Length: 182
Image (cartoon, rainbow, N blue to C red; front, side):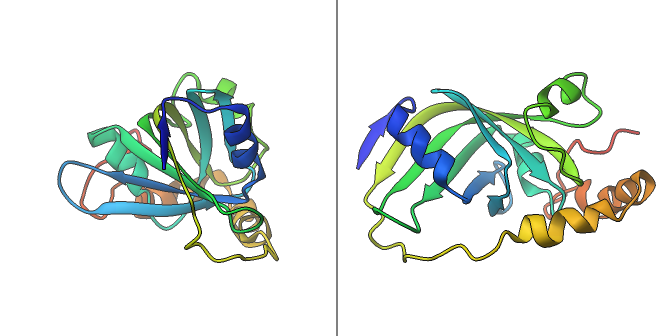
């Protein structure tokens, strides 16, 4: 196991090859959340900084946790090729569609319906481990692009806002996610 404070070219290339990653977050109280993320939603800004575009879904735990306590962990696993697990530990801030820098930050990503937040992550520690316990698997389809994005494509702005109010305004522990501004 190796621990460092920033990415290097090898780790950057590894991240860019991964079709999915995992995000873990927790507030001081309540449940820990672990979510899989996919599609073309991650950008490496530099060796100590990245951002990812968060698409709408049935929950919004990470945004609520970051609003309470901004620590975050991202994990990447090699499901093909040489075994490797990479964890990035850091802090995050959330950028919402109603924030002043939303449009400028969104320009780094493809136009994906249902985009609800951008997480700006400052990397504080980088850890690698062997990953030999992770199975080899082959990607056969990208559900985000086949199912999730087309679902949001079919909704207008009012329908998306209503969904966000109903499903994404609070975490399961009752923390405000900052998505809805009245």
